[in-house]
Image 1: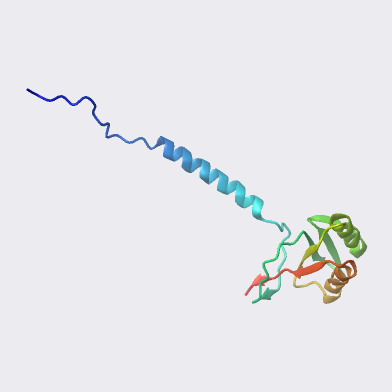
Image 2: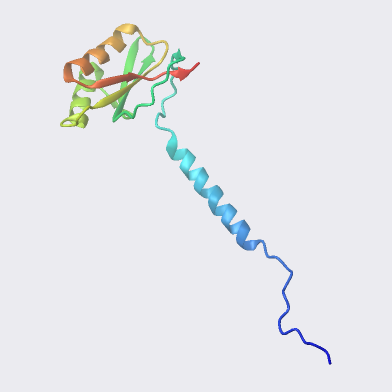
Length: 134
């Protein structure tokens, strides 16, 4: 008397669902990496061996353009140092321990950096100078 096996295991493997998952993961990573870049201005930041991992509420960028300087607050161009102060006040009004990250090119004069530092000090903002790792 022969014993019958009622079910046979199918030994084939379909990789189509795995390729769908890999495609979705790749798509997610491509989109996520384009959104990570917080600073779209191309600045040559100074080098430093000390890095502070503090979260800034807003950023100020200074870029040299010929004999003048361009000021940006959160990638929005503002008119001069007074425009920086007005933009910071409107963005950080009422914030507890407001933190500003200052991004400036290596070629920017120290006077311009000090002007932004004075704005932060006068308004009680914490200031972080952005640098690149050594």
